[in-house]
Image (cartoon, rainbow over all chains, first blue to last red; front, side):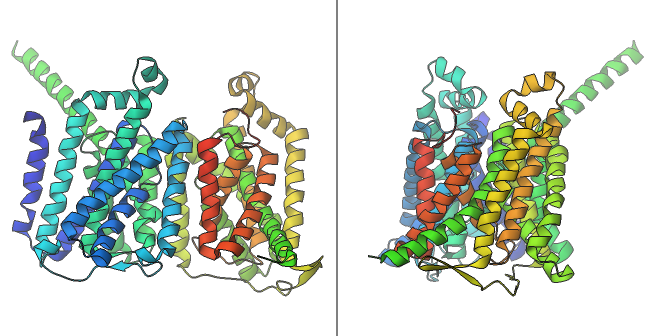
Length: 330
Length: 290
């Protein structure tokens, strides 16, 4: 249990928030930030640990969101069941895209391009296909019962998305310690060497992509239930692909807590920008773009990297102080 | 089925659009061929150039074809600065970082334009915008013919630069053997930035050719960027001839599938083609071995 201690402490602390504040503004902010953290967790497994940068995680977010919404609205399937099917469907999409692109040996920028293209194809299909509501989108009927995955207040939504983030954090921790996680990092660091040592890199990347798609899809499914509306631009739009990679990269790529840290920082920056300038469209994204370039340029390990550097400094300082005090006495 | 006349018109229109695609792709493939990076900011730069051409006409009364003479060098300098002072230093030479930096630039440029000019779609009215020229049994708008011819002129100019000028020789040397070029006294960072500038200038000219018959809004360039990626991959990353032929080909495919499948579903054919080429022949039809 010890390895889960940091996660459990963070979860417990965050979980107490709705008991302190019932402000809808605060809770709404946190729900959206946690949603982005969840989507970023998915990206981080494939991109952060596996080194395969996807520019099209919208494909998985959107599939989760659409499957959850369409199953309820058109086929009368229970929302919770739809939620699970959405995750499974998206994992399947991830496995399919992964199988196609990894078998063809696509990596680096080619992989980024092909994922982007798959997301665009899905966006265009969703904007014309009748089953998704085409250009109008799909509206989930208001039905404020827990059985329908809808709640009177925002607190239950908050706890659910927090729980999902918690599960993904622990999953990431388990993967980090597992053989699979080690293979994945080996693929990131040097794919040819990993292959030469007998790691089946295609299977490893495929596994990472499938789990990654499932985690990101959970964010999409949750989005559909929280906002009760999905259209092609929301579900498969480039915005979510960018958010998915922004959070982990700013927070600390390939670290357990990176996406959560990054999502909180990014969303806070966005809100501050809105406060400073009113609701001007675009400005928050300009700031995200600048932060992204700055992080890549000066702190490639993100906030998590800065924090661990700081801790090193403090430890070194403490040792130095202790040593000099010791000399003083002697 | 379609009559031969309509088919001819569709192919002709496809070729005209394809020429512009080719020019956008030319800039992209040039940058890829030398720097080996995929410039995700390409579409945003196209949008920025379209706004520049729009305001040159609105505020200074400059015809877009005249404005190209000023906007192209301006964007050359802009592209040079971006690569020299932002992309190069920020990326630390790591491919994954370059992807992220150019993506970040795209996000910044696109949203700065959105912030400054809002999401409104603008067009400019030129006296000759609706003039048509008769080509065989079909009619083609005059600005599109001008664009078609201009694209080949630009491609020829670019070829001459690459073939005969010292700068062109340096660019080709760096593309072939970076370390060797550096040892021979070529400043690689400068050559990289010049190449990026040339690619950006291509986009600026494409924008000036587009604006008489197209519209501009902060997302206008995005429609071209995935198509340009498709062309570049199809034609072979880094191949100039590939970009030209690929551009015309994609223009025709888009035009024909637009007629058969309808406007919005017609777009899919391009992406499907893109995915198929990426999966089965990622070095493209004309590309050298990766």
